[in-house]
Amino acid sequence: MLSRLPIIDGAVALVADYACDTGENPIWHPFEQKLYWCDIPRGWIFRFDPSTGAHERCYEGRTVGGFTIQADGSLLLFMDRGTIAIWREGL
Image (cartoon, rainbow, N blue to C red; front, side, top):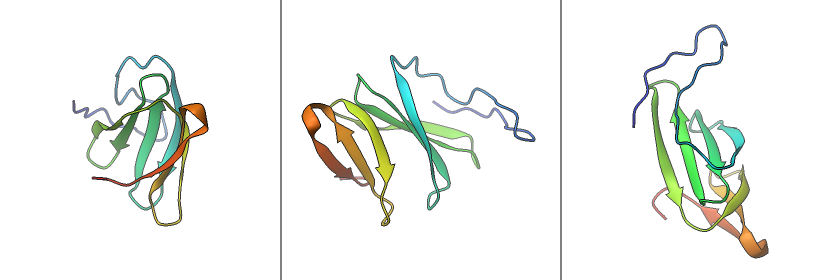
């Protein structure tokens, strides 16, 4: 799915519509210059690249209640049953 909706002068625009059950945790990734967010019950993580308008589901797995960005750029996932995991693209 690709979106080409611009964000002009800081105005809010719909960039992706994945009909998330519980969309949460929007966080800006400073190294990648992309916005990440998750759909908690589905265990999906999405990202949006404002420079191209492209967005995608980049992770699908166990329930993810939230995440943070680590110093090396990886994501630390807070998952169901108290599990945590480090996620990097392609791993």
